[in-house]
Structures are given as structure tokens and as C-alpha cells.
Picture 1: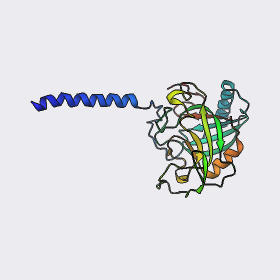
Picture 2: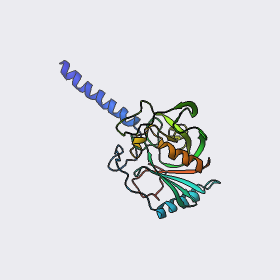
Picture 3: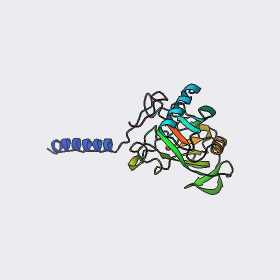
Picture 4: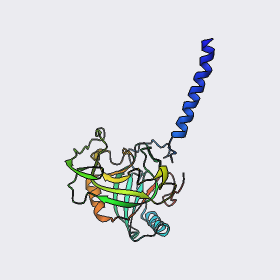
Length: 239
């Protein structure tokens, strides 16, 4: 008798838990074949022609005084490109979220779409300087070059470029607000994992690379984070 009563009750509880999990889940824009794919080797680099077309389209859609420079991050390639007047100036390997892509608060995923650099922190700080809440702690991180080893904490090092979204309802405002999620382009002590999705949502760079990039781009620079499951020129504004 007890079994007959508990059986349906347990089934109902399981159903409710599953429904709750679905409602709470971040809506992902999946990386082929799924959003948890670990890219051990980046899949090549985008062509200069494609990147130039992206820069032109971004400047057309989001005109601003600092649009001579455009940053393009390709999640699938784990690459960051800096364009100057439509020409590729610098290319870097990066590391985006180990949980894939997603714009919702609390997801720990890297947001996609179009952004600007809202604020910059760390000018003049030594390479490897640890920042906490964007403040220089005066401490240096131990740089980890073995990809099998991980830092005990998600440290932000060397330079910080804080992003703000430009697409309301997608990466700006409400529970998808990029600035409120504290999404940065920053240095990391886990340099051995650059090129492998390993972050908690931000775009990580080698410390020497983020210092160089920081020196090249002003506040207001356009940043496009491309999801990687569509042509680079197909700029997303919804999931």
C-alpha cells in the first residue's frame, strides 16, 4: 500500500524538480557539437577579408568616435583579433568560458554579441599583478604553464577591460546585462590553458598579450564576441 502511494508521489516530485531545472537553465547558443566542447586545438583563423567585412558592419550598426579599432573574439577559434581601420593589426589566442556561451546572469558563460569597452584598469601595473574588484592588490600571481594544473581561484591579472553590452534584451539590461555580470577581457595566471575554454565567463589572455592589447585600444572600442556556430559576419542579436 505504501509503495503504491509513494510511487506516484516520487514521480511527481521528480517531474517538478526537472521543470524547475529547465526554467532556471541559461538559454545557451550551443557550440557544435555542444556548448561544453573543449577545443584543444583552435580551428584555424578567420580571413582578413571576413574580418574587414565584420568591422565595416559593426561600425555601420554601432557608430561611435572610437571605431577605428574593433576587437573580434571568435569563441570557436579561441582567437581575438584587433582590427585597425578594417585591417588585422594583432591576433591572440584566448580562453573563453569552460561552460560555453550564454548571456544570462549566473551562468558563468561567455556572452556573445556586440559590446564596448566601458572602463579600463591596471595601466602601469607589473605583469601578473592580481586585481580584486578591479583594484590593484600589489600581489603577483604564480603563472601556471602546465594546462593540466589549475589555479585555486579565478584570478584577474595584469590588465582589466570591462565590457558593456550594446544590444538591449540580449546582452544589455535585466538578467543579461554584461556590465552587471562583470565580464572582462583580462590576464590570467592559467597561461597554459590559453586556447582552451577555461574561464568563468570572461575572455582570458596571456599576461603579455593583454598588456599589449590594453595599450592599443581606448575606452569605447567596439568588441564583437562571435559564437562560432554561424558565419562570422552573421552578427547575433537573439538566441
